Length: 480
Image (cartoon, rainbow, N blue to C red; front, top):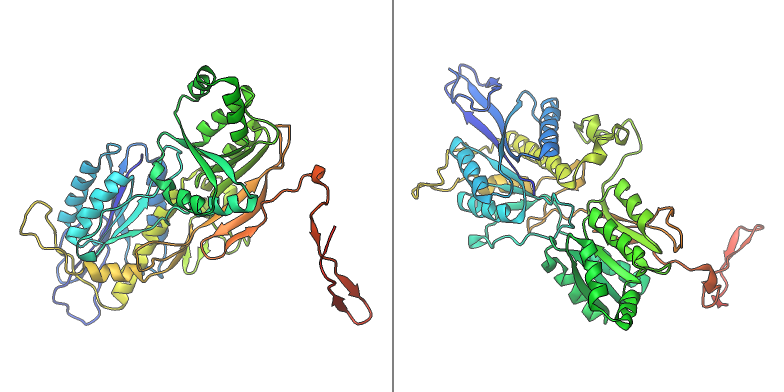
């Protein structure tokens, strides 16, 4: 699980000036000196902490800093400098230590890309110090994401904003199940998956009268199937084979591929099996590997982001130009990024816009150094104002629109549903069947009428167009 903590800080120190218009000096060192004689000092400082294997986050972070430094509309004559440190993986205590060191130097906001344990630790710290905290949940092992359960904030004043939207896979899956008219199915979930993430899905399925079973899949998939054949009688295996005809896989792409392959090899999968693979992060290559290993029908649910077809505006988001590496799909770099990296870029852009609005409104709060150890340290008195400015902001970036509701969550998310037809062959074509977004729900149809079913029970609407007066007549519906 990869970890990133970013501190964006801005020092302002004002002295007596000879003229009303202040001169802004740009400082290019992370640990900038506190004063330059007779001037207004403004240094935008971004310090980052990564796990040692967070290569892409490191690169995207630096691209965001570079793009903002070239944007005169947002920063005008200011520039952002940065410093990056590496820490051990999955170490929330060390993450808090580094965050405390940054607070001691003086910061205005914290951006973290972590797992749930580190997120809870950083949330408690930022709540206590009144530091705005943009949190990006990270899941680096390929297992589908289950939402973090953050700690309740004291006095109801939560300083953490979730840059990555809440997990909506449950909503998409329940819509898909309803469209497919499944009454009985089984869910296979990875041993690394937090099964508490299925609670709302199972509640809805129960209210709908659906029969849903759960089974955990260990990393050693071969052993799972060996155990089935060594512990089940033939009648039980036949019933299990029938259960596998309708299966939802909450597994990493690699585990899902091996699982389907084992089901086919052991003759537990058939031509009428329907596999539904649900994961926010799955690449085109991984989808094709799943399809080629599956017997029957394959449906895939994954998160997607807007893509501008017009090459002239593809890299422009309002007044901000994004590096072509990140916005041009022909570069190939974009496909190699994890979802958390995209939200990282947009979080840096969101903070830069908030800093700009603060300076425009002349409502800047100077940042005093904070000490996490001293009991006498008081929280930052400008924290709530800065949080309010960030929360009221709205940007368009790599992930589309980003803004925050009253509960501190970014709600904008979109999924696509890809699928194949039923087939006895493994080389099937994949096409987009539908999309789903947080505002409009499902757009498309997931049902497939097999040829052998004929036209029995199908309702047709016949429209007759009269050319003489260009009037259309719609006769009553007829059932054949």
